[in-house]
Length: 128
Image (cartoon, rainbow, N blue to C red; front, side, top):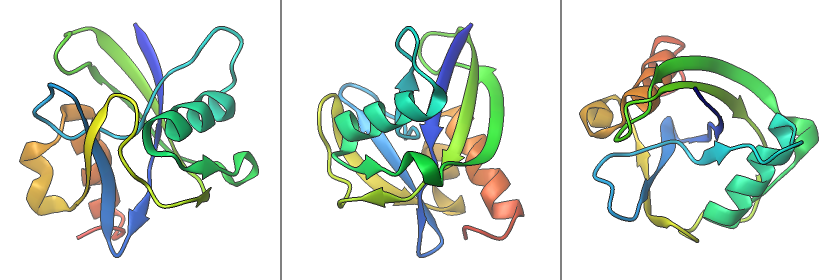
């Protein structure tokens, strides 16, 4: 099972999402832990690598845990999602080709796990 972490960032009632090179759907920024990393360490490393944003590890707050199949590889996946404060403006780095701010009207363009988070945020009144 893939065990990953993801950053949930909401601005102006839209959720930050990224597209990796060669992918056709939106994902949440984040990724796999390296051996010995905590959730906070892995998330901070991944977000810095992918978006150039420095997360404050003390600001991590759980959003949800999603169980799904990983898009494109069809493996079971557990994605621990966190809100966190960050410094810097998100911009595509490393394998990230583009970023966007998605709402409910973009749900069909999101990977299934990202769609689940988007739907939760919508149900909670956080995104439109």
